[in-house]
Length: 342
Image (cartoon, rainbow, N blue to C red; front, side, top):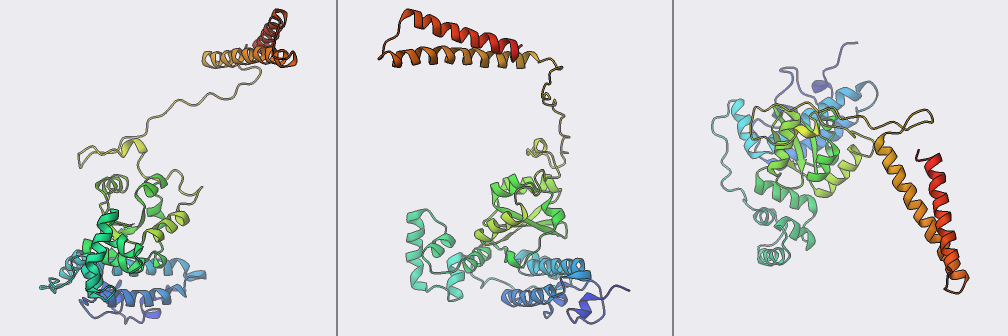
């Protein structure tokens, strides 16, 4: 059976260029500038395609879902959209001079907070050392997704709902859990020569360098709600999964300051000594360790014996009892030396 045209059969896109451009894929008018319209169409189509994510169409539906996600993230990224539109021949992209520039301006413009609340929020944030995004959430004025969209607008980044995302396993395998948990981020997939990574805030230079060295690609951050990122990390990096992930050895992921530096191959380490059997002689190091344990056990045997006499005699002990305790300790030392520490 020939492969079906999923663009036509599932999305209703007429025959033509395959794959279609981002606007056609998301059923948008060419050069649509309304970010909310882009997101709305994406959510609707995402839910529709997921209906086919079973049986023989499982892999193809996953591929299409990722295509749509990349299109949405591109068209909701201000700078990325301008670049993409120019590649399609748009000469004068719409100016965004009237767009809100800060978190609070964004929230006011969408009637999520009142203008009169701005001063109160600023004082609350300053007094507690919080960002404006975290302040409005703690004050229970705005839901976390709306606050995250506001921060995305301020940083000129895309916002992503991770519940709609199905990260590429090959990308997840490239970055180990240690890096993921340290930076609270989630790699999603590669798109047009960059690696899309979901972050809860503006990424650090350290994270960008880690991604570049491990994946040989620059990263493009997209913002997601912190709780959603933590839940995704628990899901995709559960114990036992991607334990040794990372395309580059740990020793090679230290920034060198050179763009063309190549990661070094991991050095071989000496194998740990295997458990010794009756016929296998102990190493000098093992002999020293066992002799030390034997001496400690002998001392405690002596102390324990004398302490028993001390309490049995009403907090007194004779010289002969001390000698007897020393003999017991010596006996323990001799037995362990002969049978275990030889």
